[in-house]
Image 1: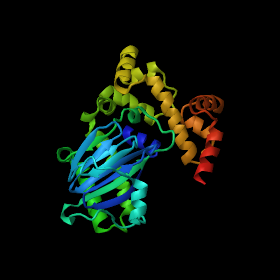
Image 2: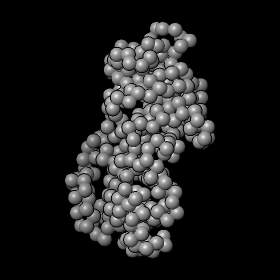
Image 3: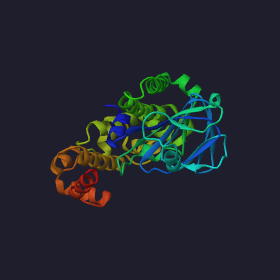
Image 4: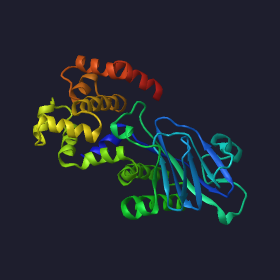
Length: 312
């Protein structure tokens, strides 16, 4: 099991393409905040600017991509600092119906900006030190793509499929975009010290081994001493290095991950509360219910009922 893939599966990462643009400058769009989501904009042709809620402005050229992990509001524009129109209004005025190319502007067609825009959603309540470590934005540049060839190849494939077979490639592009999210985190650690620490923890031999043990054998009655022994470290040294790398202690991480895994199983499986309690390492359904209620604010059965009501 790859720990990062297990995290992504458990927080229920799902990619979605929401439009492709072929826009002749000048244009500017205000993209609203979207909770439990990460937005991305990939430049196929031309140049545009992304202005974040913090005031930071980023210039992006052909081949670049910006990922906004927390789904914060931002503006995309060409040229910069143009008065932005709300995304919803722009879409309505363009008469865009979720199919084909979303075209903006009536300027010089040879100066058009072609973007592929989409987002990744997470399960409501999804939480992990990795998500908390993500910065306001991450940028994949041409030099990043040259260094991380797997990411480059996936981005190229998305562009080819979308432009060659726009009607039949939606499902493929959605799956590929999920790979892009994972590979972007791996490729952009130099842009965030916190992200570098948590990604680095997955690669460190002993800390990575401990994380893998917890993810692979979640039902085991782990103790600090048992984890430390399994990775060949003293109790105190293991606890200190784990906290420095991950941002919390080993047992705190284990407790939080057990609850996150339980939330995922409650919403994505038909397992009973008793079965979920056993799979996530609780000695009894009562102990599981107490821990779950303390963290989530309702019992497992109540959570499942609420989740089912939202879905339907």
